[in-house]
View 1 (cartoon, rainbow, N blue to C red):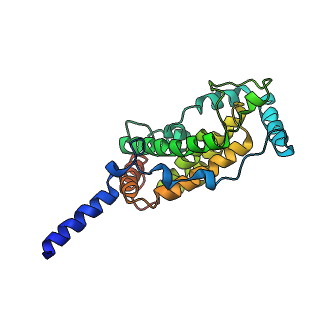
View 2: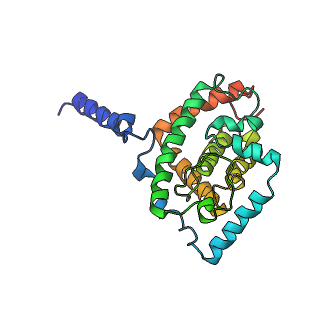
View 3: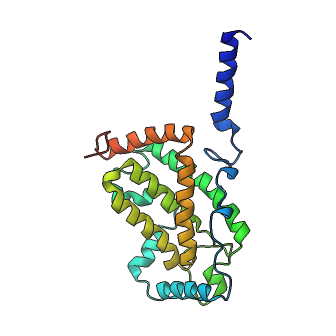
Length: 238
C-alpha cells in the first residue's frame, strides 16, 4: 500500500477510536463498560444486620435533629446541577457565564448516572424511608433502590473536577461536595453508606473521564472559561 494511503487509513482508524459517535447511544464520554461499579463497590449492609441498624440510626439522628436551615439546604440540593456549587465558586459561576462548563457537567452527570443506575439495579438496596416508614422525607423521591447514592456520586464528580479547574478553592469545593452528599441523609432518602459509595463512585468515574482524550479536550476549554468568569488567570493561581 502506498505510504499516503496507509497514513489515511491510520487517521481514519484513530478518529473512529475516539469519536463520540462510537459511544453507546445513552453515553457521551464513557460507555457503561468503562465504569463497572458493581465490581468496585463493597456490597451494602444486609437488611437487619448490625451494620444496617447502625446505618439506619444515623439516618434517624439526622432526620430527627434537622433544622429549618438544613431542610432548606437539603431541598435545594435535591437538584443535580453543578451550579449548586455557586456558593463557594462565586457569583459569576452561573449558566450564562460558563455555557461550556454547564454542558460538560451535564454530560458528566449523564455518564455517571448510567453507571450508578446499573449498580443500584444490582445491589437492590431499599431506601431508609422504605425500611422504616416512620422516616419523613422532605424531597420527592420514588421508593426505588438506594445504593450507591446518585446525588452523592454527582456531588463528588463535580467537586473533583471543579477543584481541578480552580485549585485555589479546592478545600471549600470538597467541603461543599461533602455537604451536598450528606444532605441526602438529612432528607431521609439515603443511608450514610450510600453516600460513601457515591463518593467512591464519583472518584472512579472521574478517573475514567480524566483518561479520556475527548473529555480532556472539553475539560480544558471549560476550565479556561470558568477561570476567566471567576477573574482568575489561566495558570491556576490568583
